[in-house]
Length: 599
Image (cartoon, rainbow, N blue to C red; front, side, top):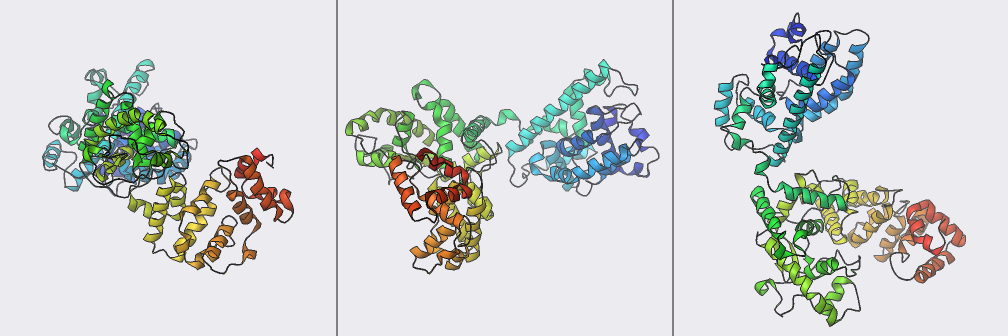
């Protein structure tokens, strides 16, 4: 019983006279609520912990979902205990707490039922109860646990997720117990200490285990720490999480936010992801040895960037050129690389690993390369190929000539590693299930070829209907509107095959204030009738703005293009600038500023 560990919580006083005192569900909830409030420092001067709105929210949204298993149908008992406890105090405390409970109700239920909050103890308690175990009987718990060998995990949850959450819960509970003991020692409360000297002398870990047993299943902590430790592996059983951390760093460097999704791979082959991930981290650690310099330490980056490309193949030579600080045109850096047929020994049939000059020009977007340049890239390319070949030995990466990438099984492993660190890493089915706005928002940050594939898949999943096209076109005009990403969102129109769009969807977009002119142009290109008068001024201005040569080339060409457009614009250049600024201030300033036309 938790009362024998956490003393002086006022449980007997609280239950005295309560009609539910004989209800084991209510008593168990009361033990947990009073114990956790007391651990968090609630004032016990009255004999029971005094709930405050802040403590109540922490209890409902953080502590109960971390430490306590609550059977289905019993969730409502815990807020009821809090309300009953608060009613014992005068001065409006009951109403304040009632408001806090109401405000936290949805978050409480969501947190208690979220598989991402499960620990090993909470998960096994739920499995044991579903098997009919008496969670208060340690012998029954042990017997039922023995029959759960190979028990399934919750859908979408990995063992690493449960391990990480359990490790965090252990730390949080140990910290709470230590602080409570120190707090009572420094200022002994009139109600008496929560922890006796004898309990603390046995070790904080022992006390925490006793509480876990009471809050989940009797004897479970001892079983999972002893004969059934294989059921609840700890951090030492997951060496690949070091690689997951490295991939997390890569994602944050690139996007700055774990909720921004990486593209879904076109194909994933399910395999023993933990074993494969361990094989991958072994290879990554070997690559840090001196013989693989200077690129051995780049293995996590290589894995991440090829996944971010939608798992389309990358060029060894192009990547080596980037590492050597060669100029690579951003317009070609994400272009897919053709994967050749079987190549002897993973190299070209010629003695050179670097592609011919003509191909190198295409890969780098640099026109003045020579055979001398190609020869200078031989050494770096060969060094990088050695790194990739070590990764390829795992069967999760491939290299064929100049092309390298992830195998379908490797894509599944990298997706797993991203997922265990909370990075949004959908598969193709999940991406197809997104709303139009979600699909567009994600695609804005992806390579063009990947965005084209995923958006086409999204449309195909909906039968390429006019309604699906209308939803997607509308999203292109609303997602990121008014932000610095608005122009990049409009640019996604270029990756859509509007020649296949139902004409009624394009005609329905003519009055859209953002993409109306694009829809008009698409209809005209197909030979379809389109009334330009339906297209608003803002859409026309954006079409002109986006068409200006803004990314590269001499400013003279941009100015000439602007002047030509302004000559045909009602009101001339000043009116065109005003219309551009009103439609997209950020892009207008970026494109027109260097011309001295920034409004």
